Length: 455
Image 1 (cartoon, rainbow, N blue to C red):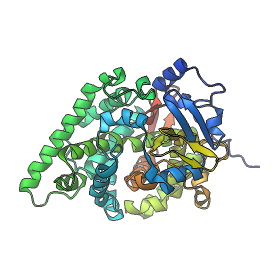
Image 2: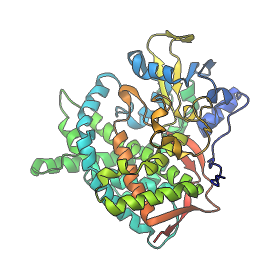
Image 3: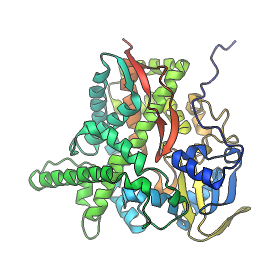
Image 4: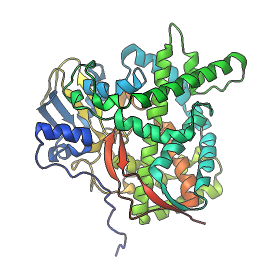
């Protein structure tokens, strides 16, 4: 008989059996949009309704998702609601820019994220992960959610900015939490598609934090500009390439600042959350953790080059990808049509909000077996290839697919390999995370975990 335990089912809101009233919906959206979705969202290929702010289409069918994000991408722009939430933070950063501004930004950043550059980041990623791991030498209980935010910040600073980000790193985790708690929430006025000039009370409280990040960016840019003026050996990193792209045919100073904000504030946050959820799920499923520990130990004993770890650690990668499925860092992708259109038997009306939500798609009853369970074997070699490209969207798809996806995958495997080769992370009675959507899928209550040396 197979003695392997039943799969671990991590915490998540149960699908609603009844639609909420308008007032209740407003409360849920402010508190935690993940709690809004009902049974049809997890069972139907698509849903078309009239929502509070106008027509709403929820797209779960991989073919429909491909149609919107790839095949007819020219007919779709960023949804109004999404822009109302993100643009106050990121302005014309890569996640929110459209048209010529987006194309110029993407072109300016592309050289940083080529495979050659990504592989060159592996050693700095390893260096920062090893230094970070030293904090656990004495053991004890740590909030892994906070720690992964700090670790990925360290890696971001070391790789894309060559260690030259202004400000105090120790304050970063609390400030980013504050930013997403205020600026990152969906305001009821956003749902109603109210004009941007109407003040959002949720975001008024975040202005001081936003100013903190803007000051960091301004100081960072000035530090690098001064170095570029006198040092011929300035590092060819993300920051230098952006600054060199400034000009009449390139990026404006404001666009450069917005893209630095995007990568400092959001670029590292997605990986941080996914790392925390991975470590948590493995702690709750030790039968999955043990073979991963053996894999990491074997690879590290024979392969010193971290560039090769991603391909050499399929079990570790699979656990991370499964955590990305269950807790997608970006839980919704929002578009709206420029022109209304017919897709098969679905009419997509003018100004419809078209939601493709990795949160529901990744847990859809018709697309996944035991969708609520943590089962890394879905992503093992031989099984991974059977997953439709458009039913698994942790990094989006189409022309606006996450430019840093390869960076994030390499970063995650290097970090997991370093941490799990040295330490074991176990839950405590206080480890009771609840997924909440504040731009990213965050663990409310944090991830307090006991860390102990493995050897």
